[in-house]
Length: 510
Image (cartoon, rainbow, N blue to C red; front, side, top):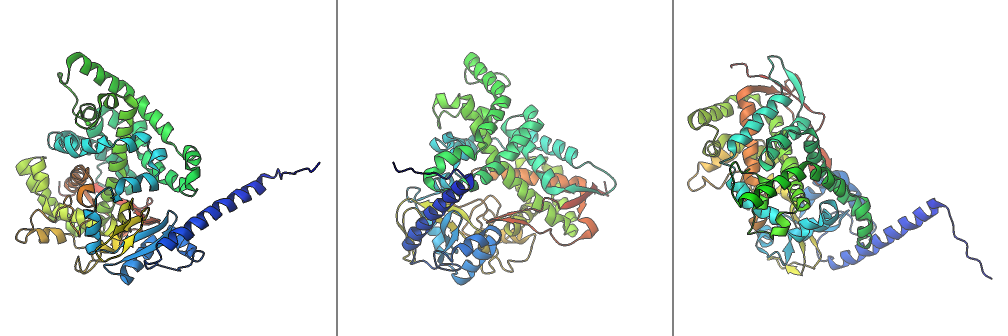
């Protein structure tokens, strides 16, 4: 009888599995490259040699996107990445084409679902229903004004705790403290006073976003047919949800009990994200809006959208102020005049044109991914220049080089703190050049119907944070440095140096 011997060496099996994965990725790459052969390639063009660019993408994505923008201005090119071939639009009419396309053809949701592996890293409910987006767009945004005093109260409390007032200069790890302050401020609005100051609750929401990104990277290393398996291995979703349920279950159950007893309104009814979600009759069925697990998922997602992006913007704003202390007095005067005249109100914040411009310029140069405005084609799509991309194509925009383009922003590599305030002085431009107003040139918060629904809240938080710092602190870099610390680069993302310290002291003229 013929005997079949199996190699029991685990390392041999590991090699075979690795070879199998590489073979699957190779044939997939061959097929995708064939479909996109008519589009110019950045880097080596061969199936094997293109992997040099994939390797470069890990640490030099910005340089690759810049190269494509320089070689194909206003045009289109393709880049091999760890997620497969990506089509990059280099500004011009092509970006308008993408913005105007329907979701049924170029889908932001499908891109997010596949690249972030949202089913596994976030929760299936986020894919089935995105009613939290409607809650953010409507009741949350509508209540920024009425709740502004609470938001600013948390700004004051969090900053005073994380950045103590002292007559001597104190070095602060800006990125870490920015995260701590932003997560508390955001959740004062989302879940209320007691939970927003709970250390475990804050830690959970800070780590959730990082885990989504890191876990999605690991899942995407594997072929799609293995995602149902590895997606359950490489995820911290369930542990995050259990922690959130532990915090929110008593709160939600009490809200539901009060609703059952008194109806839709009762004395001292909370006015926060949890309650707006429970009351969101126009956006979701009752069974979903009263599910403890589902509401916990929505709070996690709200934090995913709010905390990290806002804290990065705040950190870079502190960096830019620290290396340009001559700006402090001008910005401080604007804030002090408006808050003395109108108080800490939404109208006062909206009139802080110099501060808004400073924050925009900081974000323009330091707060934008190398590429953004991401979509996936669900059908073949033809751009206005005649180039057709097939269904299943990942499409992005070269956002960082666009925001630094001299043809769009004169002397675009230079930091001009009041660039946008000056533009708003022109006739008919008063409302256009604001942080919250998306345009063809200003893409920080996205474009068209997919513009970030939480941008009004993010802008409010940033202004409150910076305004408070300006009124109460002097700020500079160690050794009076005029240079920003180098950014940490990973793929197309930029992050502030986590080790960079900023010096704070109590405002000298107080």
